Image 1 (tube, one colour):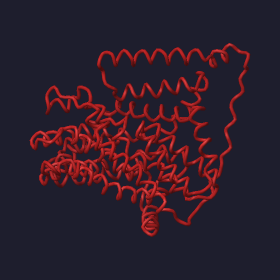
Image 2 (spheres, one colour):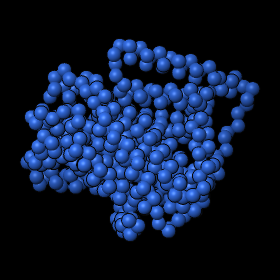
Image 3 (cartoon, helix red, strand yellow):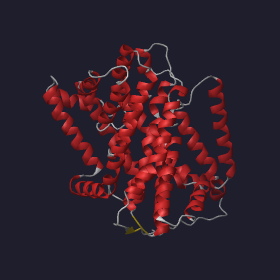
Image 4 (cartoon, one colour):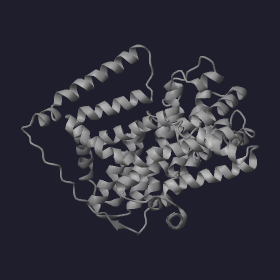
Length: 433
């Protein structure tokens, strides 16, 4: 296993570019493939790319809010105290890796933005405590728990189809799929639990002798402010945070009474207003906001480019051809597995659960209808496929890398191993359940 990691790491160090350059290269690869296998010419393909360039703005804002609100919640005194409480009791690299793996998987199941950031903070704090560690492995293990996000409470596809989703109802009129059949189904919880138990052993098997000393950066000095000023009193008035947390709690209660389901916006609000409550004052809340925004910058700039890539895949019919190639060999018992694998492949070009649902969802649901397969299970297979190759698609690793001050090549060798093992596990689940 160590030799495999060293090989993968050397390959990544030599050939893997920055995540944004990776996105540009993928676009050119898709453009070239579409020029060959579709009937459209170069000018038409460029038009397809430009047509959807800004189409994911609303969804991008939702994703950025998940990340920002998750980071703000992770930086609250309560969460920080909890992390420090655990870190003080860890004495070895082995126990640190096990804890990072378990913690990351659980946190990402609860909320991917919160889990992604708090796991990274946890890994960095443990590395500082132990001084010399396999720091790339620490960060890769913190990222590995991200695999379960789309089978968790903030998964965009299961949350979409739990309400009145346009894509679902076009194939299955008047249908919605409750969370009890997706996120809280027996097979999905069993899959999450299997990953939760197996990933710590993978982390331990990936340890190498190449350790580095993690430096502790100096904390920035806060700007001085007159504590007797009216501005200071307003910015540190705890009543604002309490009142608006109470307002939002009433909004959620009213929505649930109307029979509305938990969607992305409501979950964003829950984490945002929890952060507001736990930061206690507007001043501390705004400081946490300022700190969190930088981690979203890479995602913000890449969303339009991936939206353009999504348009190119969709309007040229290339995404359909990839999906149909898998469906041509599918049977009722194998359709979920092939949906998972095709989702993993397409995720390289459309690393957005919502965007992938728009492109692949209609095709997979039509196949589910034709083969009389549970649409909830097929939808979740697509969701897991999207999450699976996120481990080696650099888009969502950007905030974690910024937090750890590492480059993609530093963690990719480890992530390739996690991807291979988890692909076998998830494929087996979709064949057997």
